[in-house]
Each structure stands twice: as C-alpha cells, then as structure tokens.
Image 1 (cartoon, rainbow, N blue to C red):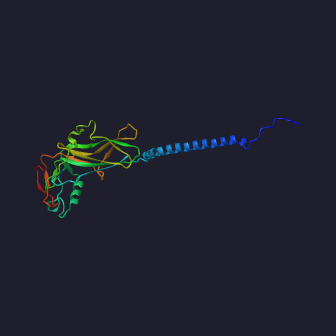
Image 2: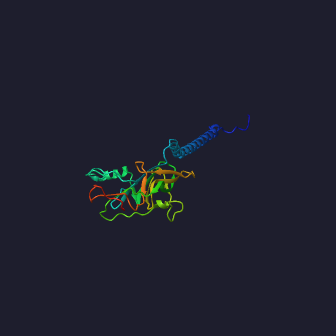
Image 3: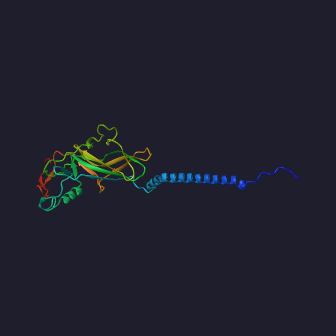
Length: 270
C-alpha cells in the first residue's frame, strides 16, 4: 500500500479572481479620468465662450457701448439764440398761422438754435460685452467756441415758475467739480452685457458760445487702456449752448397760447 501527502484541494475560480479585480479597477480609473477630462474640457470651453464671443464682436467692429444722448425740450420761461437774424414770412412772422409746437421745435433744429444760460442732456449707456466695462467719466467735449451769439433771440413766455437746474459742468471753465479728482462722475460705473446707466449732464455758459458733444471715458476688460466714445443726439447733431448777449440785432416773441412768433424789437436784450 502506497502512502503519501495528498495535494491540497483545488478552489474553483482562484485563477480568475485577481485578473477580474484588476479589470474592474482599470475600468473605474478610465471612467474617473474620462469624467474628469470631460469636466475640465467643458469648464474650459464654457469659461472661454464669453471671451470668444467678445473677441468675435471686436473683430466685427461692434462697439463696446451703445450710446444715446438727448436734451430736454425748451420750456416756458427759457430763451434760445441764433447766430444771425432769421427770415420772416408773410405777416412778418417766423411761422405760418396755426403752427404747432412741433413746427417750433423743427424751426429750432433747422436753424441750429443755441440754448442760453443752461441746458440738461441725458446720456444713456448700454454695454454689449460680457466682460466688464468700467465707465470712468462722462463729460462735455467742446468742439467749437466763439463769442456769444447775438444775431437774434427767441423767448418762450412763462405761465408759471421756470424750473431750476443744478449746475454740473460750466463750459466757460470746464473742470471737474469739488469732491472728485480727475473726473466729473462722483464714482465709476461698472456695466456688463445688457446693463444700462443713465447720466444727466447739466451744462451752463455765460461768456461764450459752445458747440459740444459728450465724451465717455471707459476701461474694457483687463486692459489698462482708457478708451473713449463720443455721444450726440439721436439725429447725430451736437449740442449748442451760448451765453446771453447784452444786445441782439433782432428779438422774437409771441402772444400767450400762440406760436405766432414775430419780430417785436431790435437791438435789445432778450
């Protein structure tokens, strides 16, 4: 009878257990790495997308800011001045009988009348970029100056108290007011895409005539370069403001509740 040590019993599946665990570990690593890469790529793409859109807008020449400016309509109790006397029609009036307020406004625009003493201009700014645009300053830019116009003046008879406007910019001495070094705005304004800001400029002049528009100084994104945009009224016209002359060659006025403007006197104050 032969005796010996019996071999240990064989466990089914021992040869496949270790490779199976390695395969599952590899799959987990691949899945984790793939997920991390997808997250990284999507984050980079999504983060860069606004920047790419802004650069594309830059290449297309799209302005950084959409701007408009408009002046308040002339009100009762105010006057305007002209560089020279205006031609009178039949009946020695500036406008035909039955003219409306719109006809008066058209006359002022056509003859490029200048406001006297002061005027208020409202500037609206809207950003077109996803990167921040910082508005550093908004102020008048003088395009032309000359002695105060004395060709003719026109008044708008008051039926009550005339409004009082706060001085924001003296065109005779165009410098920032007290309390702000280097700028007219009291603080900077940060705008992103679609955001708006409204700035109201009240300009005054007593010594001379001025043709002017509005200058906006701003920073775009991370660039340290100060950029500028110049704003005029919706028709592309500059603003006009003049000091009041001591005497005008002609003076026009109208009866109350009428637009029948006539030459009522010459060589007098308005």
